[in-house]
Image (cartoon, rainbow, N blue to C red):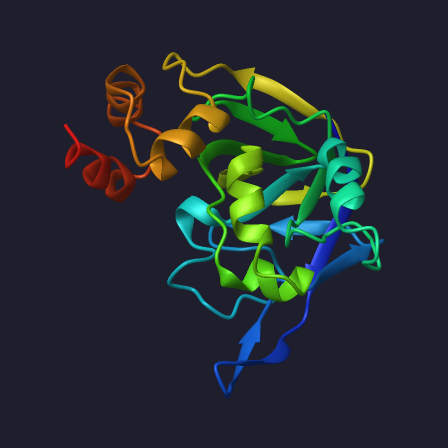
Length: 210
């Protein structure tokens, strides 16, 4: 896996239900290295800090490998890296292989896979079509948030080197499914609840389905 694009955004204003709102999901490539801090990406814009940024969502990664699929569905869009609001577009990122809790070195940064991205209505704003939310969920490839264990810089071309594989075998794809599925598979549910790297509030919500 390697970074093929580093992306940041500025506040973008849009109309929603008759009122003005702002979002930071409109991210675009930058040639500059990014500094990944414990709470967010330096110089990036985060509007809603209740649902974005913070310890467990400091940086969002999405696979470049998924772009051809989405370009086929939305060929009319002006495509560039960062379309999904990701800070790092990563070649070779596979949510069906990466586990919640895996630890990677990227540039001078050490990160830990923390949770999948759950789409909100602002992804629909970015794509100009609210149906992207259901399509994104049905497709099952969410990208992943990471927590920053050691702060530092990353840049285009940096490889993601696995430092430690999580002993809990819950993958990002499985985690995405169990969080959003109406019918919870009991084995997968227990696997998620037992994963100490999944944020505690997520595990507490899942415990209600036991």
